[in-house]
Image (cartoon, rainbow, N blue to C red; front, side, top):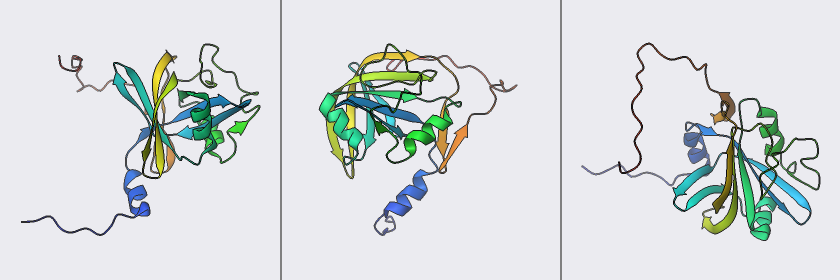
Length: 184
């Protein structure tokens, strides 16, 4: 028996199906040409531990893509459930490109590559390792040069809405399994 033939996948169909995949919410930042650039993203991932690599996808037409290309550096900030206003701010087109985009926000003093809003769950500073064209986006691969983690519950995105994790209460039936490293 053969698989059914499917019609071409449309952007709308792909977007509707992808809404069912919950993701974390992060802000991608870079400094270049005297400006700070920022954009809310959900396409962030760790790629490798050795060497330490991260990846984030965005439109190659974005001023932020040009800023990362020009500066050769960027930062990714993983937002907490208390930072939804920040996620909304930098999701607004044009809001993340300014000489003073972070003037009213406290930033982490140790991050390089781009401004890192204080109070984030975690952050990653990186040097641009590669730019890979992937369809209508570019995958920015960064070699991590610094990290930090303040903790807190992450802000999530699911079904076109920001979401929060439920309370952290252990279940009566849950069990802890030992964690093993890759290849262990």
